[in-house]
Length: 154
Image (cartoon, rainbow, N blue to C red; front, side, top):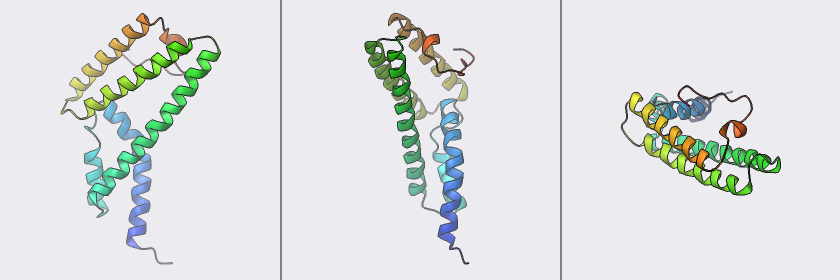
């Protein structure tokens, strides 16, 4: 059976992208990549693909993951409301604050920051979030997903 070059390249890109999306997101969050464009460019060059299409693929996958995470976060918060851990108003406030924090993190990706600068900005954002949560009467320890540890500096 003869496999076309485009099909093989598509499968390779899909495989690499699927395995890399989580890593890119994590690296972006920790200052490892500015915005994933370098990886998309490298994949496009390696497999002789259209760079803009590869970038769009990565962006689409990133958006899908964000949407899935938001749905899971909302479900988890609703369960906390039902358990009496937080109020419905606190849930609404947390969802709004989560969107605000997401926008802030995305803005960091668009800046040309060193790893240390990114770390400092993320720590400042976490500290700000903790202060906000305390002001809202939200116990962050009580709402943290099971098994999730605080990262250093949190």
